[in-house]
Amino acid sequence: MQITVNGKAETLSQPATVAEYLALRQLPGNAVAVEWNGTILSPAALDRTALSEGDTLEILRFVGGG
Amino acid sequence: MIKEDVLKIGGQALTSRLFVGTGKFGDDRLIPEVIAKSGAQVVTVALRRMDFEAPDHSMLPYIPKECVLMPNTSGARTADEAIRIARLARAAGCGDWIKIEIVSDNKYLLPDNGQHRHRHGKRPGADGGGLRRGGPRRAQIVSGRAGRRIRICAGLLSPDRIPPLNGRHEDEFL
Image 1 (cartoon, rainbow over the protein chains, first blue to last red):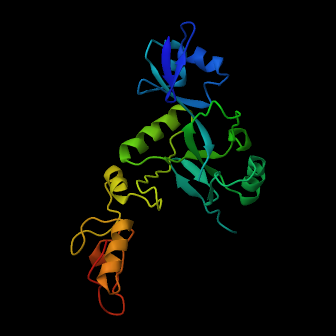
Image 2: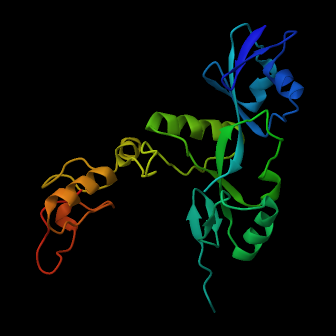
């Protein structure tokens, strides 16, 4: 399955939810902001959102800023 | 008896009016000490794409849990982008505080007052009686061409509310 994450193409070897993808990347769901196909996902929605071919994810985190 | 000076914003009672940022620390390990010694209770952060190729590092653990996190919308060039960033920050658990930054000028990093106005319904500068729309870039053009002194209102005052300078009002405002 081909998806795009932060602007880069990725291939998933098996179906996954967004939460499972984050776990694969060792990213705690409560430390990042996730946008799936242009829709901002709440933490509760991460494990009930299944990724499909062609999906786009934007994963952001907090960094230092003024 | 000294009365405690409490600043209330959004239901949050603050005893410090100092908001500190987190973008210029040479070492994030300095953050807890700086916050403790400054007494700041509101800390700003930014939201950026996760860089999967860089070592994973988060500065959030260095911010005391009792602090209010206020993400900024840095990176936004338009009002819509700022709103999107604000919503992302809230979805990431940052609460309802947001510091709006809308910068379309990547050279001078000057704010886009027109976009700020669009979202807040407030005029960032004067209107009527002179230049109707403006911004810092237009101020540079005007001041260069005017050949005379110009007062620039970068706040919320309309021209008729700006006190006269040396007994007379200036002709042009932004």
